[in-house]
Structure formats: C-alpha cells, structure tokens
Length: 288
Image (tube, rainbow, N blue to C red; front, side, top):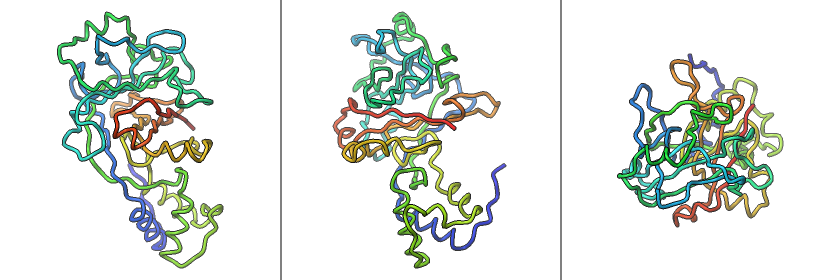
C-alpha cells in the first residue's frame, strides 16, 4: 500500500513549480508480468542474447566471455519520437566473475569489464542454439555475480520525468522554485533544511527518479557520479542512455537486484547518441 502524504500547501506548490521547470521526456521500461519467455531478438532482461555471428563475442579484460543483462530492440520504440535509432539492437554486457559487476571506479567509461553493444541491423535467421554454441553464460545462470536473476520481456511507454533531489543541480532549481512560489531566499547549500519532514518526504515521493527507463533523470541511492568528474566530462555525459533499477516480481522473486536494492545508470552524450556512437558511456551502480 502506498503511503498517504499530508503536505503543506506551500510544499505542493513548490513541487509543482519544480515539475514545471524540469519536465523532460522519458521512455519507461516495463517488465511484462506473466508473459511467455522472450525470443532471441526481443527486448528483454537476461536470457540468451541476440548476436551477430560475424562479430567477435564481447570479452572482458581477461579475455572471458561476458554475460548480457539487458537488450533493447529499437524496433519496439520506432513509434516514439526520440533521438534513438529506429532499428537495431542495444545491449549491456558485464563480466561474469566480478564483485562490483563490471564497474570501474577510476575509469567509469573504460568498458573493460562492461560493454555497450549496438547492432545497427538484426539478422532474424540467427538462432539461440547458434549463440549458445559460442560458449556463453546467461545472467540468470550466474546468480553469484549477476544483478539479473530472471528473464523477462520488456515493453516501453513514453512519459514525462522530473528532476529529483539526488541529481546534481537540484539545489539551484529548488532555490528558484521556492523564490518563485513564496518569495523566500534560500541558500543553495542549505536547501534541504527548508521543508519539514513530511513536506520533504512528499517531495521525494513526487519527484522520485527510480524505475527502469531511457532518458529522463537518473536516480541514485548514493551520489550522482558526475559530481566527481571534471566540469567538461560532467557536461558531456548529459543523457541517461539506460537506467536499470532493482525489481521484484509480484510473486516476491527478484528479477533485478543491485547489491542491497540499488540502481544502475548508463550515461552518454546526446549528440553522440544521435550519431550512433556508443563508444563513450559511463556505467555506474550504487546501493544503500
């Protein structure tokens, strides 16, 4: 049961102002409950990945085959007005034996132990048996080191997202919203002291960025990793290519679990995305 909030009128107006100021398009990814197992080329969590048999299968920094966490068939999004390709396949792979699941704290865009793959075309004649013959391990077969425990098909829906308090830059937006609504002057480094507990909880609930998504605003259980980048890099990684949240099914079984109920984000540059260049992508995940 969702919590019932009792915010002040002031808090409601300020949150609505933040929404007005920061509204941005998002593609929400929904895991299909109770569906048949997805096919090789379907958009999905886990499972046997599609692979172009003319290419070398992705290997980690030690030369071992990686496992696929999620794949998105862009034909499923072709009816949406986005900067994404209208066809092709996007996939996220990580290494199969890493406690931090492929993340590099020092070089988060290195793609040594994670890999973002884009296939500009998809060969419908490739079979799961042919991909299996490459000696792969699926995510759900590797529970010790995989955040994805069960295979599931994905669907997509266009929506609107709003800046949330965990994202770099929120303090400045909050200050502007408070000024516009109430006339109060708030110091940016003390913005979090402005609301009482109930109003603050309401704001976080209304502006929550958690969920599986493409675009929109990211969510974190810790800190926006772009805070630790140079200003140039932080500006460059301006787009959420993919966010994969922890996810429990209606039957209580985990589909996705990042550590202790964490969340993962992939960031890239919007102009690079338009050009179909996925070579510079930051991969980050954190948990409570």
